Length: 231
Length: 267
Image (cartoon, rainbow over all chains, first blue to last red; front, side, top):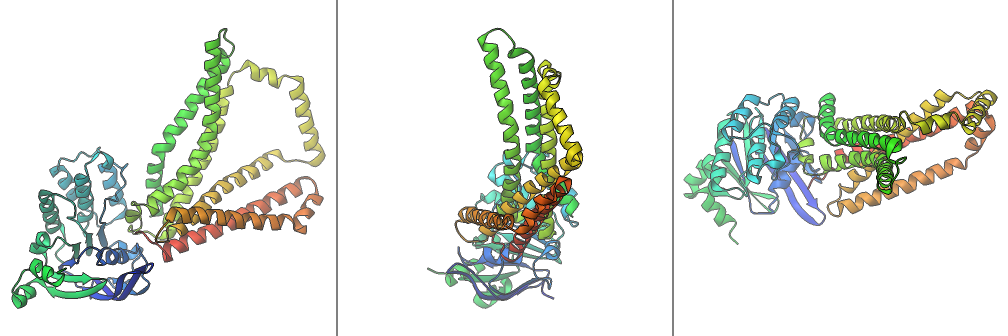
């Protein structure tokens, strides 16, 4: 059964259409790139999957259920911006995640935080933007979730941090889980993807495995993306 | 999960309310010292200092009530409708639990605020000659006799009346919070001008509740209450007011939770 499924999903902001009868499925055990130019509907789709927006029509299902308290317990979501409470210290943030998520692996999170020399008594407010993003990612990837929805995890960070983030994602997800990475920085994520979904103007343009693209089109995902979305 | 939400809500709010309570108690102590020493001292500067400290205490007492309500409302907006909402609305909890955690913690802080205000007043007037003078004055004795006469005449139950008034005051604060929650939830369900919509909805709610109260005051039932006389009319009036607050609170709660479920729009 698909872990994430959308059928005829439509969402508009006023007169601007964000998703237009979009349908797709994501199977467990895959790292999927949700790729598209700015404003293509990637963030809207991920927010709908988390119940942060309500669709105008169509359905979005996670593990066969509509987004809600039950699906939140199996989905680990990384928003496109830092949303963890700034007043919390690292220790309080760990307490917070441990309290609410049964699948939160505190030891693993502490290990990664120690590796980055992040103090437990340091508040999120005291951290740099890059460190905040790393801490948020560590919290998200320290869960043994069934579905990871990562919205622009490498947007706006330096190349070294990008490497750290991608290594953290690869090194911490359960191979039976699905990971959806939304981004427009294809070249950086291509190496870790099993499958890609190209999305533009709220519609799926292409859904294919990375190997299939390389074999059939004879080009990289990045090259194909540039060709498909040529301005 | 509700217990955990409440625990973290207390953690988030205590870091502001705790220091505020401490400040008001320190101000009460300085006000007491002013009344004891500075205001009776010879010289302009000590008298000025004493007056200023008393003024600061008065302002602090009023500000504490306002800040506690504003903080609880702002907490709802920032924690659920702001960036933190991305974390809160993706927790494995229901919208009802999120709203209840806010209501419960806010109400506890309102009770704590009332207790701290009472304690601050006691600290301020502790061991004052002035107070002893007032209690032993002819005016105070006559006022006390008048109250006793009223109690005997109408059979007043003062402790019960105090409990009813306190319950009504607490309900008023909680329902006011819920009114803000409903307005903020509705306002933030729009794509643009979220704050402006929130303010507009708050005033709309105020208008409707005032209109409903005004219509109720003009009914025969309420004027009939005043003809019953004695404690019964007071009890019935308080019961009616408490019921009205509960109904308003129920409506605002429903508006808030339904909006968060059906029209959540964290853009």
